[in-house]
Amino acid sequence: MTDTTLSGVHLADSARKSRIHETFGVALLLLAPSLVFLALFTYWPVVQVAWQSLTVESFGGATRTGLDNFQRLFADARFARAAQNNIVFAVGTVVPSIVLALAFAVGLQETTRLTSGLRTVFILPVMIPLVAASALFSFIFQPRFGLLDYYLGSLGFGTTNWIGNPDLALWSLMGLTVWKNAGYYMLFFLAGLQAIPDELYESARVEGAKAVQRFRRITLPLLRPTLAFVVVIALLQVLTNVDHIILLTGGGPSDSTNVLLYYIYQQAHENYDIGLAAAATVVTVAALLVISAVSLRTLEHGIHYEG
Image (cartoon, rainbow, N blue to C red):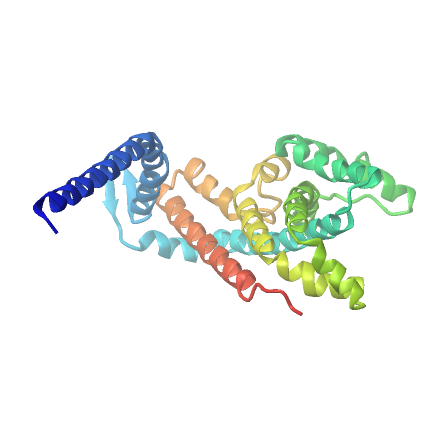
């Protein structure tokens, strides 16, 4: 190979590297606003909360306390009650919402005039803001004069204080949440069902597979990625939506509807205990990450078509 050829190869290589560096520089410049936004409003608050969980704020400044805030947190009976309520609320809303959403999606998979109308009916609650839905259910749950008691009274049942009874308040909020979220999750399942090839169902029919067998061996396995995504979204909503709790019960009666996020709000803005609120935030986020990771790994494991 001559010197001229080597020189040409070197120049071509230098030009290619220059183009790569130029492209990287342009990409970095375009990403800079987003990176700055994430750093200021996502990563820095996370670092700040983690630091505050290890300190106590006072007029003289922040004093480092190590794990004292976490020790106080786990010794607080109200935190334990809020965590217990969150677990019950999560199981009592996520599971029914997903089961109903999947049933709606499978039943309304075929596009007809009737199914299109029913889809609209199920999606309507999704379009109502949670604050407005809470106001609506406040009227429904009113004892004696509420819509629910009115219809139950016509069937011979007595008056029930749905959100004023510690034994019923959390279950009433679960009903509101399931009504609000099932249609939202249905949209994801409908999209997942449309991605399944019709040829699989046709082959199963030819082989004599019943509807239940087609659902168990085709639909459910191929919907696992969608199911994993919906489970994580549902868990996020359970832990982050407290508008209905604030408006309907305020965490009561007797902390029967208090949940982790509202507990954090109370410690930070009512008791002004920033260290305890930060510690509760760290524990809540860590629990959410672990639960989400386990859910994704469990549901996505072994995604395949069962012949």
